[in-house]
Length: 428
Image (tube, rainbow, N blue to C red; front, side):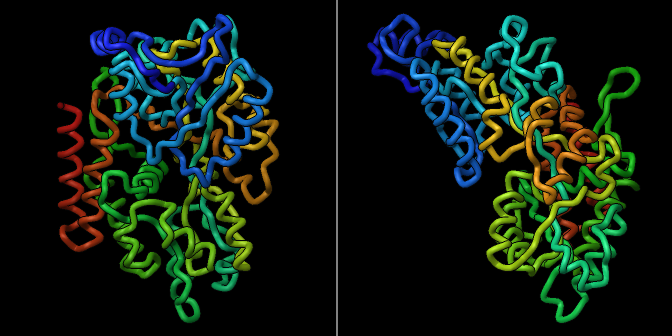
């Protein structure tokens, strides 16, 4: 939704009434095609299929033209600022955990009336609806679904005498240590990002370990009050597990500074055979597998340890929200429906959040672990509603786990600090 050159009066109106539709171009009255902007935050290298789907839409719908805009990494605050000034994209790709942040100030357009009158195919079987609803209304449509699967090099496992990918966290630690110790030690067993930054992707593995062992960072009690859901002993055990991967040599020491699962040290290590196992979402795994083939390395995805236990892994992905400022909400809804359809997923290398559409997607055998795991995954919506942000939880968890890896504090002290931080976040 590009802002036209406004008059001073029109600009003043936008500033005074920020939720008024002051942008958008084209019209439904014959002055030309409606022009909409769809913003997404994934790297352009992972969205060529989406661009192809948009191209197909534009060819088939000359009266509604869509421009694909990439703003990476995700910056939900920027979208909020733009929307509050009357601008921003017409349709925004939103992480599930960010939907309520945008729904609370009514930045997004409620979609229930569109759902009732003109539902998309498969609307009755959508994943992650707990994260896209707020105060009884639907503020975004679940679009894609993903989770982390255990990406591994079967040859590296076999060379170390391991016949199958680990199915428990204990097996993962044991197998990774064995692989790192095998032969010359050129191949490390398990590469994960151990940085203490607030966005460190160690967050996923930490939560998976907790959930699969019956704990959770925070929970709502029987009286409806939010409280911590993990004991100091359980949290210390979790910290010791991940710190132990570094101490045993299962994970390279350099990974203490790695922030993202797609960091070159991890993905290139997998592709070249110097890393035997890690965890990745499907959008990263698919192109990496092709890259690895060129290097003579075979990669496959397996279910995460305990990944078929309901609630033990996260249900992630992307939702589609319509900016309340859009001048063309009806046209934007038509585009959202198209983006959720099987046609889009013929080229877009993601898994759909619609169970009906997911059943039509041809998933290679190497990626079947994702579809096996998704029905058991649960969104981080389990942390929403406490009044605290997920970011506040991430910050205290990632920083303190990392502090133990680097020897700055003991696991017991770190566990106590995390619990204090969670309590403080719930009180604020």
